[in-house]
Length: 377
Image (tube, rainbow, N blue to C red; front, side):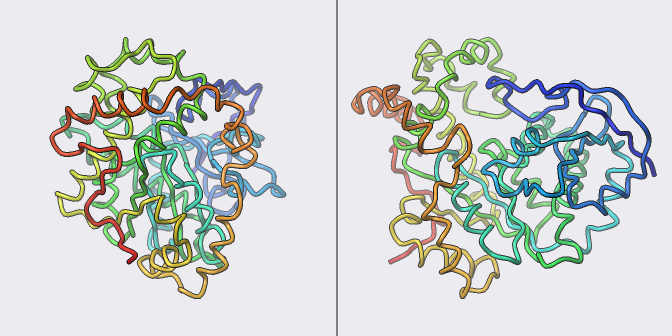
């Protein structure tokens, strides 16, 4: 079994680079190595897929750098990448098959985004027996690969299975017996397929009041208004990631520099998707950010109990809640606080949100409570 080294010449990501991609790097083709090296080296991790050429792309990072500590795995992988390793799909799937019976219990975390899901990932990271991965971006790519008519689902399932196995490879024969994988908001679009291939996985959905999500998005993504015209011209493409975008496109103000309508539809689309998953009988437990911050010890204890983790770990895990989960990134409290002036009057935000939610048959309010939300009373 063989893989190819890709020697990095330069790094090319910009704020407009939505997902991890091989084009994030300029590189030169290098030597051939044994692909099993990927399983043996803890500092080699899955970064993205080069779907056009049917190969998985791994990054090799310094041994003295813990890339799982920063808020977002894909950004840490990009920043610290020393070289790339390209593995043909056939060998990629074989590597996954070799270890699939040995990986730990999988915990999948889905969310609406800007709702404390990174904080929850940090909570899991406090537990020694958990490998907590915050936003491995390969899943965002796979959302875009899925055909709307379902014609390629078997191939997508195979990719998902191999990605999960290779991301969780560190749980094989080491102290971690759980792997918590927190996806970006788009990842919920393949939650049904992930449940199909990993029926024993524990599924968590985290959400928050739409008004707070929209305000948080405006603080964090000040550059986003520059992308809106591109989205408007490519609604069909972006609807793969935000399915309600196509249905609501005529109601969205794509010239709004605050992008209030777009952030609202992103939130609404994820909540809508959750309802479809729930109605399909997929066992997923929902968690409100408001509950996590109000009674963290009880909430974390309940989550750990649901996932099969010792309740005795909850107190120590709650220490993560005292820190800024996105410290060191562009989305830290310190950095986003500087963008407070980007937030318009709350009445304007409420008016725009309510106008869009009024068009949905079920989700009518910004503080909508989804079914199967964990109760703490």
